[in-house]
Each structure stands twice: as C-alpha cells, then as structure tokens.
Length: 293
Image (tube, rainbow, N blue to C red; front, side):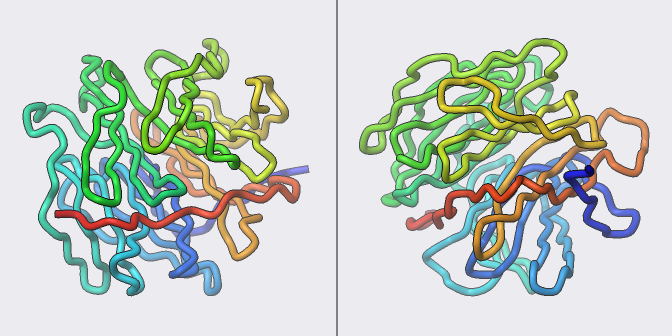
C-alpha cells in the first residue's frame, strides 16, 4: 500500500524545499524554497498553491502573533530575520544575527511553546563548521545556544516541553537538549545516522512523544521513540527528503518537503508530498509572540 501522494503543481519543483509550517490562522501549509529563493503556500480548503519570489535565501518562516492578518509571517533570511507580508509582498528591515559572517545563511527554525524562535545558521558552501543555534525571545533577546555546526536542522520540541531535538546533518547526528526557562543544555546524542541512512534533516514531533525525521539522501522519513529507537519508516520516491509538518484542523495530515539540488531532473525530487501517518496527530505550532526590530 502506498502511504504517500505527490501534491500536483504542474512542472514546479523546489530547488531546496524546507521550512515546513502549518498556519492555523490561514488554514494553510507554508514551506520555503531556500535557494530559488521562494515562499510557497498550500491552502488546504481549496488546494490552491501560490508561490512568491524572495529577494535572498530564505531558510524558514513562522507565524507572527503581532499581526493577525493572513500572510503575515516572520522569516529567516540570509541577512537576518524580518517580517513578511503577502499580497502584496512586503519585507521589513532585517535583524542581523551574524553580520560578521557574510558566508553564512539561515537553514531551519521553529517556535517553542513560549513563542520564542530557535534557528540555526550555516556556511553556504558547507565546508566550514561556522554555524550556530540561536534563540530569539519574545522580548527580542538574541542568545547563542550552541556553536560549531556544519548543517543545522530542526529544531523540534517534545510534547511535554522538556526536550528539544536538533541535528547537525553534516555529522549525521541528532542531539537532545534539556530545556529550562529559555535555556538549553545539550543532554546527549539522540540518534546517529549511518551511511545507509543518509543524513538527518528537518524534523517534527507528534502528540505521542515520538520524533519524525527526514532523511536527506535516504529517501524516507523515520519515526523515533523517546529513547532513540526506530518505531517505523515510510519510504518516499524522492531522494533528498528535507522537512516534515503536521497540518489541518486535527493536526492529522502530514506534509513532507524535498529537494532537487545536485540531482538530475525527475518527477519526484523537489516535490511536495502528503503522507499517511496512520492516524498520528502532531503538536500545535506556536506563533512568534515578539517583534522584529
């Protein structure tokens, strides 16, 4: 039995699909195409897909609580964090995180239960371990949490709020962090991928306490238990699977992004998929509750 379907959007494919986000306010699933660069939106009620060109690489988007209008987001651009409004496209001033590292860009980011943003940066050439993990509080405080990343991916937060999962894809490692009132302590290696697995990419958690991870160069997603053991795997026809998000009013629909970068053109690489996750439900995403200055 096939557990996936490709979302039809003509000949459009993502160069590097990422940043999977369910936005209850808009009834829409958003995702980015980092290297195009572009921002995509799938409205679930109608199936309509829209795509907007962006001025520079865009690693992630989160919903903004400060402006309740449809299409109001906060995004992680190469040059910094900014508000994004759609229809028409308007992008606010950037809040730079790494002005001293012009070769770096944003790669992945999400909000936690408090409305803070956690996001990673990386070397565009993927040759230097110059990336870092940051937390941007609702009050606007920027805190560097961890350093030395080749390719940061995630984060994802446990249903109980005690743990955060975050990967250094270049090292094939997923770490577990203990969370405590805005602070994070690297607790242990949660999962280490081997060569046959490919590389751990984007991830999400479900309401049962499991972690779902995308396999770059592995062509699948895997559900891991809280102890790091493998619970199930779903094979997909794209080779470079990049991110996962639960969506829909019941958080029972799963969407998965992929990339075509570095590959010969194909029907599936760079496509968006909806996956049958067997009735599992996700955790509600939180909007960023602060301002981008």
